[in-house]
Length: 314
Image 1 (tube, rainbow, N blue to C red):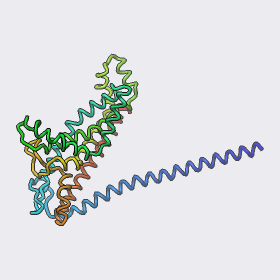
Image 2 (tube, rainbow, N blue to C red):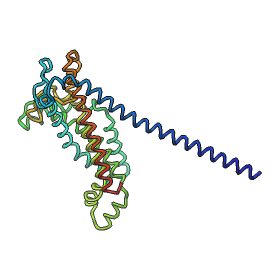
Image 3 (cartoon, helix red, strand yellow):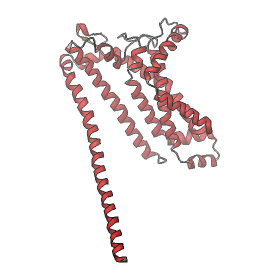
Image 4 (tube, helix red, strand yellow):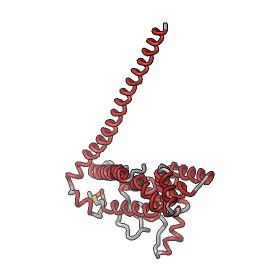
């Protein structure tokens, strides 16, 4: 009787083990398939955009389009330089304003805030990160635009209605800062407490520990957060479309109106759909955005892996 019972138990365990191994095999297949589907989707989108960009690329030299300042699709003038410059200005200014605030907020939440204060501040940051960017744009039209036009620009002897490069950069910094803050907090909080205890134990102050130990150890995650934020600003559409002014020109100053690559598509695609070359030119702008944003994200992944191998704290 005992032998029969033991045999039944062994067969039951063997059956459960077989089902688990089968489930493991099928889950591996599905996950691999999902990865290949993601690659195929990205490749398909890129190839489609490239194919639809061929008419403009075969008609005009790429170098002339990238360096020309004349954007007049009705007369077949396709100069992307004003939009490229506007995109660079907005992205650079947004990161200059947003990164220090995001880093400071992340250090405060991870290393200084405690108890309910930490919970409240972290929750507010997460809520801000989840708010749709169009809400920030609408609030900026009501509050930020009049304030910049009436008070900020005159300080620099600039006359503006309030919309322009600086306004977009300020609002995009507000949009992207909670996103970078949340990712940086995760990187700092993932560090082992032994790092803090060891540094404090040899006589370092808390600030010295953060500056010399924790920021270096959390560098891979923080740098990735900055690069991902950079890519998010670069591809932003709604806020620039609402606040940049829509003038395809090289900005004379940071308070000037302008254009970015995404707003170029938004502002011109609908009304100029009937012009084949214009449609192809705008699709090529989309191709440039896809490639550049992918490079930002891919660069963030490579840098994170490299720094993780260098710093073995994570």
